[in-house]
Image (cartoon, rainbow, N blue to C red; front, side, top):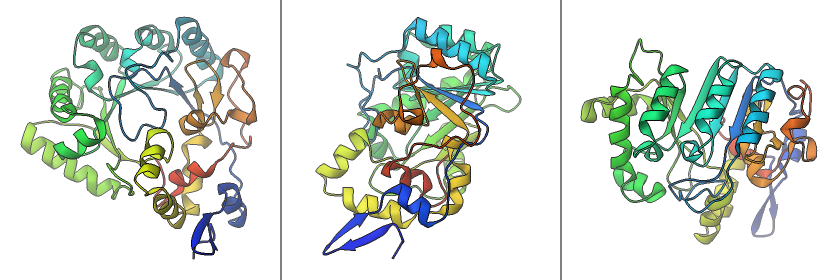
Length: 323
């Protein structure tokens, strides 16, 4: 039995993640922080079943222009090489273009995480000009090549709308060799299981999308769903929570810890507070255990700083680890 699982009668108790690290003689601390991840709000046009921040169309949690300016100032002062903008659907924040313009002089790479359908309507043209001008990388969610699985996770009609947007992105140069416009995919399971091999899934996506639809892309990354937010609720309602957590624990891979994203990035909430990652943000587990606003920071967290952990951290250490 894995060291993180402890039998208690007929039930299986999960050892705290911190205990598992200690048993494996692992100290989870920061390396040099190079990526600034910015959650600019939970407003989204989808209500995805797996969403750890419970984003949706009715959310009023949106980063304002003043906070965006403070974030951009922090990016400049902190010497970050990458800005990773997420949500919700970042495209629905009216300050996204302003934030990109402010970040561009300070960082060498800007990523916008897109659900694709949020840019399927009137926002397209203005955003696309800014994306192209600053060579913004689009990291798009496409959980499956199966229409029914994608729509079950993300909503009816999402699969077809996503394909239409991907064709349009290719037409604008995204995902096309030699343009410098990078289009990547992230794919996560539709149910209570871990993703398949990243390399094999990328090969299948590349082959099927090109053959069936003529769609091209640069890279594909897989990740497991964290048992937080709506996904946690769904797991518990379906009776799958215990088995899913046990699977994460049994798949704990100590070799994955060195490459964890929390060692190299710092996450900022829509209100401007700092966290070790977006999952800790969802749990309200702030950086260093206290609420620190970005306006208080003169630079990134120091190498060697401890990272706040919780049992959801098993997700990032299961199998081959978390991208």
